[in-house]
Length: 178
Image (spheres, rainbow, N blue to C red):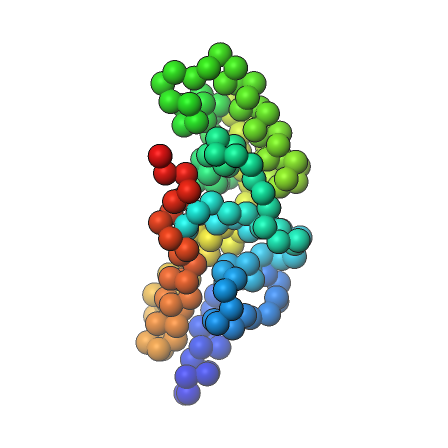
């Protein structure tokens, strides 16, 4: 088998939430992650500075504390994150008296920019719902699993690993480091 067959074989093995959206050449500057979610879904990036995008391109997710709330929800995707944990993550040991109300405001604004569906209020906190390929971290893990499959040609495995590494845009959540 030639290299083209091996690469296409590796691509056939990759689960895709993209429902057939096309491939992108490696020379383009846009992250490959944006290819995989269907057009009506957003894409969130944690492998580098926090970023979110949708059909119309990048989504402005707000200031540093609001971005921090989004990051904590994304890091625990599909899991309810207690309000007290979010308050501790954003303000530390001495939150202001208005922390709970401010957190609710941040979540409301995030719902406004991300759409009403992804973030649920669920006692005792909030849950961000997403499929793995909506996150670059999920896509990265998927690509690693594909590269490790038995029977995958070594060159195709290297190509898949290269694609996984291209998802990294710098240190994870670099813009939120304090």
